[in-house]
Length: 466
Image 1 (cartoon, rainbow, N blue to C red):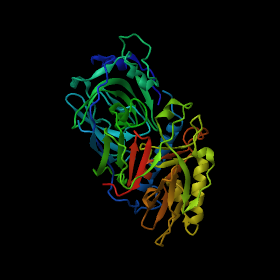
Image 2 (cartoon, rainbow, N blue to C red; image 1 turned 180 degrees about the vertical axis):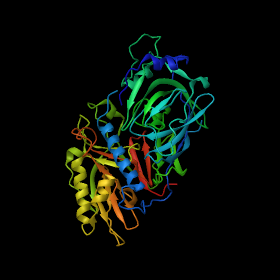
Image 3 (cartoon, one colour; image 1 turned 30 degrees about the horizontal axis):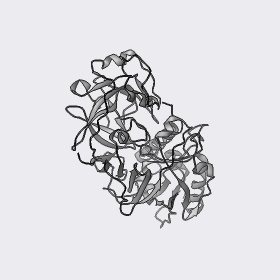
């Protein structure tokens, strides 16, 4: 993400909002958020119009493949820059993300956000003049996107440049050097396939258990290909978990159906002691983020992946891809904002080759591979199918065996099956920069995931999410 200065025209749009300079951050107990997905049971995607260029499922998969690669490119090549828990519903969206609803302001204004563990700033579409270009997603009317109106909130304040929180978005814990009476400079953030820009506010975020005052949130005025706000759950100071002082948060993603049906599961936000282990959950420690790397890499959740197995056979992946160097290149992160899991080209080729070898009895569907952007794809027809099991093995012995529907999808009644993992062949010459493996939300479906921030560990177990 790359913060940058914008024109004064943008600033004048909301200059009537009071300026907050160095008020002390006041935190109150937090709550839990719900995660919504398209379906309550893991299942394979089916479509009757197989091998057709007009096949809507193939078009959807092609879009999600492209957006996953764009997201991976951004993550790998970022621009530097009373109760103790709550619950919020979390919904799957047709464009590949999972959304939650949060309330800001006094009185509260409820807005929709994409839940994103790969970035930190929380921002919403803001003011009547908010503009979003190329936001014509399914079921999204870019002319009627819900916006936060600062003038309607008595607690909204523009963040002053002398407030140390102003430095958060610019990669510093110190105040930005400026005239003490100025507001915090405008930001611009780059995401995988879009961007957003605006000004920082100090505002109240509301939960049934009580509000959290002086919460730093982005008031975005201009966006590209961002159909809603983003709730950053990364490891930066401006993230929702950091500002709320969360001990842990957890979610269980219901299955994608890419139809925006209102099916949801819960995102839990916990502020009390989280030392106890949850029943049946396996844990692996988060890896310390590379300190000499780009500042954006410090926001990611790195995990200690030791090996990948296909059908019980270890894929021989070179060590440099599994463990990040001091420059941040290599290693594995987990990201709720990416749809399909991404692997650097060499890693992906090794994994794909092993599937091809173990499924050699099935004919490749090369036409579907071309249309969908996924590979390998197989024509399985109506034959009984033997699927190799895909497993991730982590430091400490934790093993995550993916549900079948998390890494293969079937298209068509006659049965064309594709692996829903993408490679870096189209990411560009700098594909070796940044994390080598990005575990996306498609591979997190029907898995309970627990981000234990207090103890620095990731917990997981397979379960049907609902």
